[in-house]
Length: 126
Image (tube, rainbow, N blue to C red; front, side, top):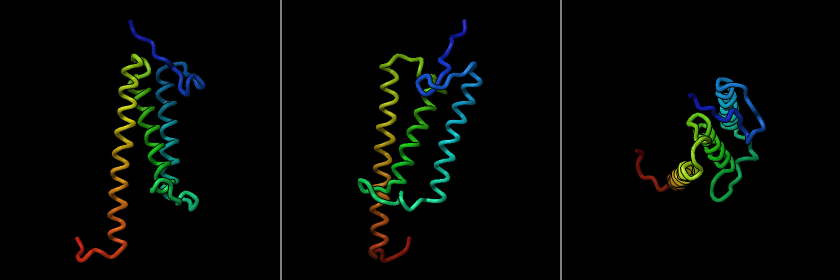
């Protein structure tokens, strides 16, 4: 007997009639988020170039939207919604922590390298 999966997203605000419709709905949602990220990356609005916690607001937006997309991919396409709550929390929170930690390291080290290049400490070009 086939299992039935929850056919709603946004905590039940948007419901679908079949699995195919839900897959297309989540794909469209992820595509809209990605298109928004691409537009922000191309135009880089000046209002988002300020710094919060040592990082540009635009970078924070990219990191947050990437985490949202990863969450939806795992939640809907990998069927985490149908698992026990302990397993869901272990997978989701571990992923969020890992992504956040790696982003912090990458951006901190990138900021250091940018500082070294801009302050004239380079004696030779790599």
